[in-house]
Image 1: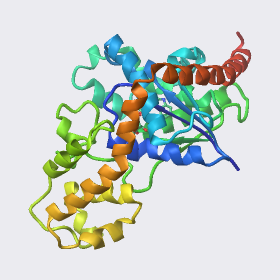
Image 2 (image 1 turned 90 degrees about the vertical axis):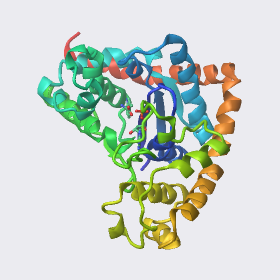
Image 3 (image 1 turned 60 degrees about the vertical axis):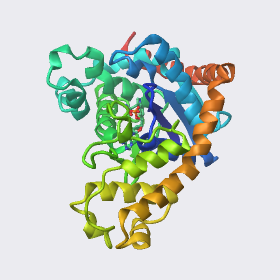
Amino acid sequence: MGKKIFSGVQPTGNLHLGNYLGAIKNFVELNNDNENKCVFCVVDLHAITVKQDPKELRNNIRETVATFIASGIDPKKSIIFNQSQVTAHSEAAWILSCVARMGWLNRMTQFKEKAGKDKEKASIGLYSYPVLMAADILLYDSTHVPVGDDQKQHLELCRDIAQKFNNDYKIDNFFKIPEPLIQKEFSRIMSLKDGLKKMSKSELSDLSRINLTDEKDQIIMKIKKAKTDALPMPSNIDDLKERPEAKNLIGIYSSITGLSLEKSIHNFSGENFSKFKENLAEVLVEKLTPISLEIRKLLNEKNYLDQILSDGCKKAHEIASQKVKKIHEIVGF
Ligand code: AMP
Ligand code: TRP
């Protein structure tokens, strides 16, 4: 049976290889299966949980749409829209925040990481962020949510909220309990400068990530400069245990080429890193440069991008507003 897919990406700029391999590549595969109904949301309400420059935010919203399309998501098949334009998301988030428990949110590791030492100064939005995410997912009766590994805990919270709402109001199955879709291997792409840190938009050094808008020469240079260790290339999976950088680079190679990890290791076993890096850069350039060219082209077609969003918003509104109406009835408004 077809799946109902929902996922979101924050329009905070610098979409990178981690976003692509952890999430967007998966979106494209799900979009290509005609049995599925897919909704891909540019989560601008989530973006403002930390300070954003309004002009940059507006550009980043379009850039995220351009990235979806350049990566292969077909706006005729999937709904692409931005969250702020479908008010049902904020409305449902409020109601769900009355269902979610403080104790549950207090366990969220992403809040702890993002708020850092000075929690008192974090926005309330940053704290309740996963409740809004639950609203996003539950409004569309989503059955499957493709995300990177870092969102697993938020998905579990979403399931708890759905369950508690159904129990509290004694309506079995009103909210569908969604399943996460997380890549089995390499669901977490690490920084090119530190194999123990996640590749991230917010990392200061641009050398730590490959941006989806990087050009050929930048990709080659960043892979050349990527951190490795002093040993030759590994010969088997066990060799990767204490070698986070080698593991990450081989993982990227295997994700991009679709070769198994064993086969990827076998292809370069015992070689030195420079030969492997040349190959890795080559497959990355082959895969990513058409995407980055297309992103740049689409960014000059603002009207086209805006039209996609406004068409998507209409379709999303139809679904989400119906669900909010039912929620109102259930709650007693
Ligand atoms: P964000 O940019 O935080 O909105 O993330 C968009 C999607 O990319 C989410 O599904 C994340 O889980 C995924 N993602 C972000 N960073 C990484 C990473 N380093 N490795 C794998 N997936 C990631
Ligand atoms: N929190 C997700 C991230 O930062 C983005 C997101 C918002 C999302 N709403 C969602 C992902 C709903 C999946 C489903 O990556």
